[in-house]
Amino acid sequence: MKVENIKDINKFFQVIDSCKGKVELVTGEGDRLNLKSKLTQYVSLANIFSNGTIPELEIIASEPEDVTRLVDYMVNQ
Image (tube, rainbow, N blue to C red; front, side, top):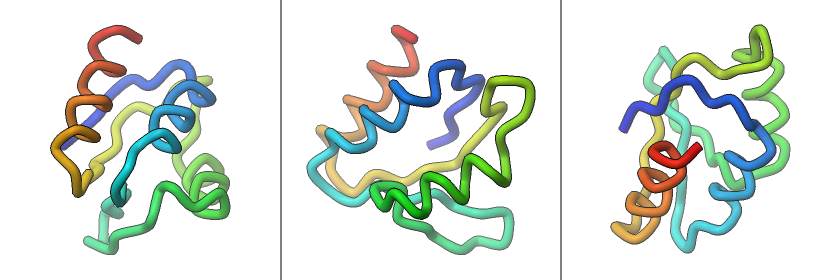
């Protein structure tokens, strides 16, 4: 799933942390990074943070309830 225009970075990572299964960031090269890892969160912020928002990310959630949680966040942010 692609997520766009994340304005509240802290809230986004709180939602990621609340997920039950794996949540992975897909890089431009096709690598998958565990977004529940704090190190990966900091590295991803350093690489893609611009102007206070994250313009677009591709993420994969392994559990259907986590997909629902992420979609709810995106709709209500």
